[in-house]
Length: 301
Image (cartoon, rainbow, N blue to C red; front, side, top):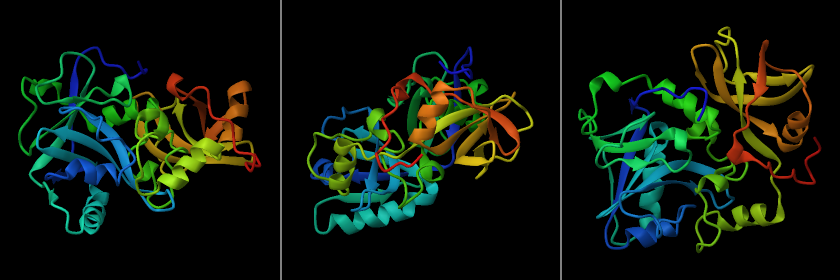
C-alpha cells in the first residue's frame, strides 16, 4: 500500500470524467480494431485501461473501458471527450454501432477497505486504486455512507504515488507514447491481439527496445510545495524532467515527472539530491515499475 492508505473506506466523485456509450452488434469488433486494450477478453462487469492512438502511435485519448451486458462504457477525461467521440464516429462509417455521449452518467471512485458496491468494477491498474462505479448523475453507489465521501485529490495522491498516469496532463495528446508511460505493464496494451490504430509503431517500440523516457513518481516531504505544475525536476544545474500531474498529501506532495531512462537508472543507484523548483524531492519508484527498461541506445543521457 502507499503511504496515503486510509484505515477506512473512502469514496470520491470524479467530476473530471465523461462517459461515452458504445453498443450494437459489432461494438466489440469495432473497439477491438481501434484501441490498444483487448476488449474481447474483458469480462462483463470489469474495466480495463486503454487508449486511442494516432497512426504514428501517439496517444490521442486514454480511457477506462467498462464492459456491460449490452456493450461498453468508455470513461475519459472531460477535456478529451468531444474529440474522442468525434473520432469514434469517423471510424464507425456505416457499421451498426450506436455511439452516445452519456451526459447523465458520472464516475465515482472508492478505496481503502470494505466490499465494493454492486455494479462497481475493480481498478486493475493497481490495488491502491480500489474500484470505479458509473451511475446516474446525482446518485451515489449503493450501500455507500455519505460520511465516506472525501476529496478527489486524495485518490489522485494514491494514483500518482502508485505511478499510474491518467488523462491529458500525464499523457499529452499527440505526444505521449504508451511505453514511455509504462502502460504496457498496466494492462492497457495487448501485444497478442490483432491490428489497431498505431499498433505497428507501438509493437516496434516494444520489441526493439526503443524506449527513451519514463514517467516516474517523486515525493516531496515538505508542506512548502505549493506550485508544482510544469515545474522542473533538477539535479544541481541540470534539468532532468518536468512535473506532470501532482497532488497534495497533507505533509507534502507527490507528482509524476517525465524523465530520461538513463537518468532514472543512475538515480536508482546513487544518492543525488533532487529539487522540484527549490524544494527537495526524492524518487519513489513502485515495485511494479521494476526493473526499469534499459534505455534505448539513442538515449544520450
